[in-house]
Every structure is written in structure tokens, then in C-alpha cells.
Amino acid sequence: MSDMELFDIRVTVERIEGRSVCSLSVGDYFEVKNSGQVSIPEGKQFCMWAMQSVMPLIPAKMRQLPASDWLETDTHVACPDPDERVIMRIDRLGTTRLNSSDLT
Image 1: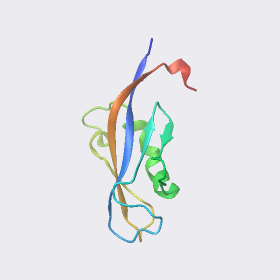
Image 2: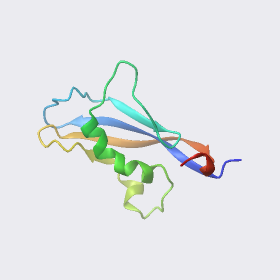
Image 3: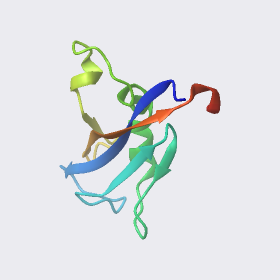
């Protein structure tokens, strides 16, 4: 019997306002499912620096938050490289029911 429900997450490159030196393109994405499984489409890559800028927000975006919480409505994150200005969007996919006792 599951005791918690988390959103699965997709982070997508929405736009690139500068020059992409890390080979990202608009539409590239990665997903986080089942609380902590990261996947990237086969044959693709995702810049670890861009990914690390989003990761601190993922645990909060996986949970249903109060409507007044800024993390409930804000969905965009920028890559830390000011020359690239890669803007990523965090979307919630379906939910996954989990047992907290199965997680560390």
C-alpha cells in the first residue's frame, strides 16, 4: 500500500537567448521519475551545469504545494552560464504512488 504521491517531472529547454556552447537545443529534455530516476532520451545529452541549476527545485516541484507558494506557479529556470542564457521549463507529468519505507 503506497503512502505518498509524487509528480514525475520533465525539464525542457524552452529557449536559448544567447549562444549554446554545450550543444543543447530547444526541445531537449530530461525527466525525473519515481522520486529520483533521471532519464535522457537515447542518443541525446544534457549539460550537467544546466541540469544542476534545476535540481534543487525538483523535490519541491514533485510535491503538491499550496496554491500561494511561489514554487507552485514558477516553472522557469536559467542555466548559470550568462553567455548561453538557456531557459528551461519544469513540467509536471503524471503522478507516481510510492511507499516512503522503500526510499532512503
